Image (cartoon, rainbow, N blue to C red):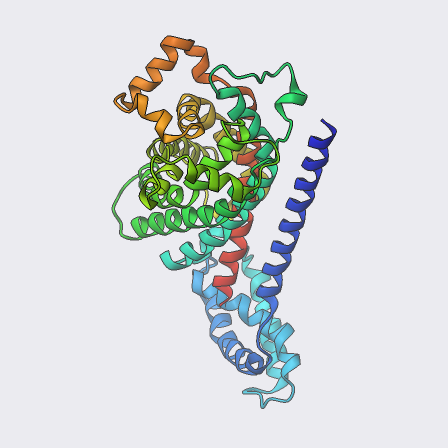
Amino acid sequence: MAKYFSNRWIAIALTASFLLVLSSSLQVAALTTPSSSKTIRSQKQHDYADSSINKSIHSKPELSRRGFIGSCAALAACTVLAPSSSNATPLHQTSDTTVNSNLIASAIEQEKISINPSTIPALTSFQESISGFISGSAVSTVKTLVKYPLDTATVRLQMPNTQYTLQNLPKLFSGSFDGIVAPLLSNIPAGAVFFAVKDATKSALKNSNTGLPKWALTSAAVAMALPPYWLIRNPSEVVKTRIQVRADGYYEGMSTIDAFQLALAQADGNSTTSGISELYQGYSENVLYGFPADIIKFVAYDYLSGGKGKSSVSPGEGAVYGALSTGVAQLVTTPLDVLRNRIMAVSKEEQDRDVKLSYVDRLAKIAKEEGVGELFAGSTPRVAKAMLSGAIQFATYEETKQKIGQLFIKK
């Protein structure tokens, strides 16, 4: 137990460090610009100040997106960038700069211009894809490190005739970080690809004016993102599951390389095809599990957040909504999780005995032979893991998406 808590604190420390580095990097990227372009940027933004102030004074109180951003850019240029470009030949006199700066500030005060998230320009599909890729990487890293012990406990409780119980927690959590290297290495690119494809697809459908409701857009986007996601993640998931349950030939402290070699050795035949087939054991079941789980999660999240855009949801709100929506989604789909983990835990040769059974027949077989309760085995640590995972996912995701979106807008 002491070893488990020690490892967990290490994981939390690594997570905090990752978030700190990510946040710092984004802020530096947002503030840093080439020194050679400062003069040009200052002059362009200074020129735009005149047109922006005229629009803000002589038009309606509600500014357009472009006008609002232009005014803010002009104010920032006059107050921050202009003094640093003293060596350049100004397009107007210095007194004009001061007057324009004061006029902008006065206009903002008189017209009571406030920062409204709805005035922020929408990102393109490509920009959504890039921000989703970066956000997905951050989410996957944090989630994998923090939730792994609970994931290990869940998988162990779901196995048939398991020796693990909730009454013996030290044994249940012993070696709970075994096998973490493989999913950590694969979940980062897999999560990045998932959110990149999902966000790009959703943005493209929304911009094409299909007229689909938001839940349908989310469902279509998730359906497009899941196959490539599990294409990347499945091999590590197979190895991770077998290490966690101490499957035949797998042992505590086993290295990731040895686990992969053993999985390939267990393949039916020595061909490359059979080895790949072994590592993709349970691929279809993973996709079938992931679709309803992610649909319920994202649709519930959109409902709880009131359909707000990503710029309107704070990290704190994202954490609460994410925890609730993910907890519900994971509880409902527990039977599908039990089936997929059992399939991945044994070699393809052992699984071939049930090859003629359909997906539904396999679920029915578990319920008939072991009881309906076994379909919800491990639900307690699973829901706890889900709520923790959801809170981290959406808090990290929303925060990162907002910062990436700000970088695109500033450019």
